[in-house]
Image (cartoon, rainbow over all chains, first blue to last red; front, side):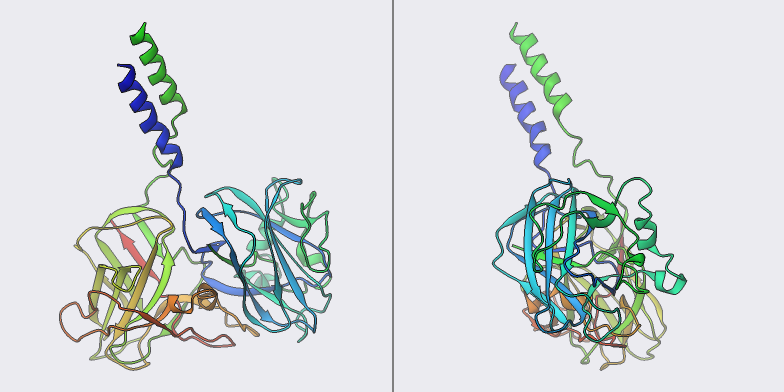
Length: 211
Length: 207
């Protein structure tokens, strides 16, 4: 009887490990339409709190895209953090933004993400510019019709931060384009009001992550 | 005593065990994912099989229906969509073939039930017996200024061959699509304003 109960307990416990993982994470999902946003306040760390659609184990590659380029020396940093002001930095990468296009970084310290857990996805650049200028980098992001409706789009709704700071500027800035080890507190921010954000809403950048 | 201990263990296990997978199973799913805005893309060479690799967003069992959508009318031509297991020799899971003579839904019911597993990679593929003119509903690249990068390009960031033309072409008979894709040769759409070439097609699959 005890053996039977133990076996049953083990079988039930195995359910806890039933987690969806992938070897190719597009985050925050496929989005449907690509767009862009500008972040143009030097070394300011902008964060989005996002759940993962799948887990991924021992990722070492991370890509993002640029729809427009920055000036010579432009570096964009990406940090992925546990969702806490002192949360661990799971991943950090730096990407050349002197040219547009898909920019992948390989060989980053292996990290893992858990399905449906919320993380802070944060970006920064080493440059302050004017949105739309040929030397202001813009990230490939998911689409927001806000531009067509005076700024009242999906990102605007998120940035209202009705329940908690879902989108905002981290207390800890980047250093030369390298995201800090922790974000510190997130100040709920309507990115539309930030210098450099112009008329384009700040939607989460699309990341591609692989082992 | 042993019986009580066993029952206690069982009760503890029941208390601690999570619900099986904890997710409701949808009966319908959009591939490659739910999209906010759709666009239109075109296929290339006649009978060329073009494929896109994606990770299933959820686990869904026993799909028997599948549909794509043609965004133009192409009389006297035939179009086909298929979903394959990822891999050059991956099995074909589902297929729909029909006339491209009228735009709109190109779907099939009564398919052999197939299952997609959350996080697992698959290939969605399409072909037609017309060069460059067949268009289908796809994920969109915003048609505003200055888009130098698109999502389809990003998917192939580390492996260009995740999107491209398959080694095995369609044949103008039967289900049209081949039983396996063979290797994919990268053919990633370019960025830039107004480009509409070969982005992810949108499929709907249902139980």
